[in-house]
Length: 382
Ligand SMILES: CCCCCCCCCCCC[C@H](C)C(=O)SCCNC(=O)CCNC(=O)[C@H](O)C(C)(C)COP(=O)(O)OP(=O)(O)OC[C@H]1O[C@@H](n2cnc3c(N)ncnc32)[C@H](O)[C@@H]1OP(=O)(O)O
Image 1 (tube, rainbow, N blue to C red):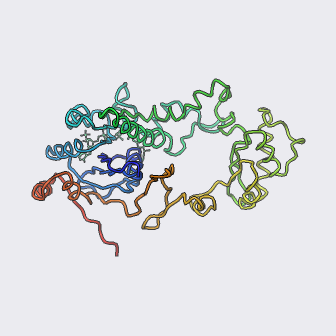
Image 2: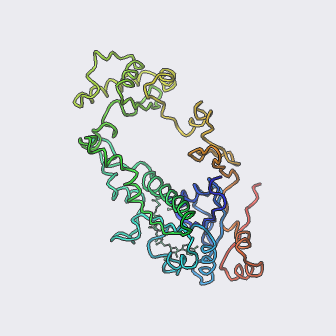
Image 3: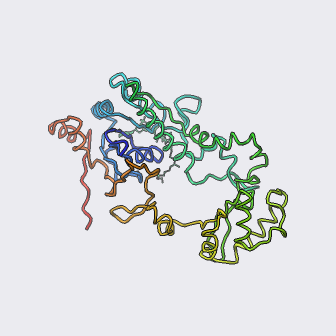
């Protein structure tokens, strides 16, 4: 795997940093999540392949321990509000002094500077501040956040993982680490570069929900089928649009032109009526093999049994038979090998990791007795 040999210390966070850590683990990094002590259970649902060490950072010994782990690693990934790590004496400048090769990734909403830097927030706030949220949603309706995918994951976790991999690559030349300031506002805005930059060709001249790709166009939308399912239509180019009409058994000569904005409501009405006349399975059969850019909107239950996804093994099952997406993209020589065993319980690997980082059994026992660290065994399932 591409990242074998890379050691990552991930401070436990809510959603974006865990995803970033999981990407690194999927591609071979050893990712050690630092959890709090005295916590009933972890909220990290993206812990695949990680180890867990539980440290009480409200003790000076806990902070000293974390410092040792960080300076003997390649990457630190921290998801806290600006200033939290500095308050602990674990800011990047201190740690980089001890380990100049360290890559110190800071994944926050607003970044490390600016007047919002210390403000709390969540995906929807970051998306709002990126400008993108103002463009999302149907015409005449309020802006709509597409789950917490854009800021937390695309602009946050994924962009931060890119930053870490870039810094690792650069380190092979310079021998030096660096600090990564990953702001989810900026990451989301960057993911939205197409929207920003395609304004110059008039793609977004109309208001929200009335443009080609924001649910304005009838040929780029979803339609309900007679069994209450949906089909997705993305027939933008004229040759695919022609095939769409063919599949729907509509006569182009009797319809308004594809690009006539004023006729879009009427076209949508016709498509809606047509799609409502057959089931999703019927439409899938009709459009399979036609280059019309029409596909079923698959539910989580349907997705892994769809022949295409099955043929590519795009979804995997872990040892509990829980299904999730296989890591992407696929690398030809060094693909990801996602761990299929259960996620770690908090403190499951405390002893193992501390031993690996050079602590003696006596030191570990002493820290456990003093409540600096906690180690927990996996409960047997009856
Ligand atoms: C009913 C509610 C249940 C909740 C269930 C939740 C289920 C999961 C749902 C996921 C939802 C995801 C949502 C939509 C998101 O958008 S997640 C993205 C959130 N934003 C970010 O990550 C941006 C960067 N982070 C932040 O801005 C802030 O961390 C935050 C998310 C607003 C949370 O703020 P807050 O709780 O005040 O924490 P922070 O200021 O970061 O300080 C953390 C404090 O914790 C301490 N800490 C850390 N590790 C340890 C440890 N091992 N042991 C002891 N203490 C620890 C730190 O030292 C720090 O303490 P202090 O400096 O406050 O004294």
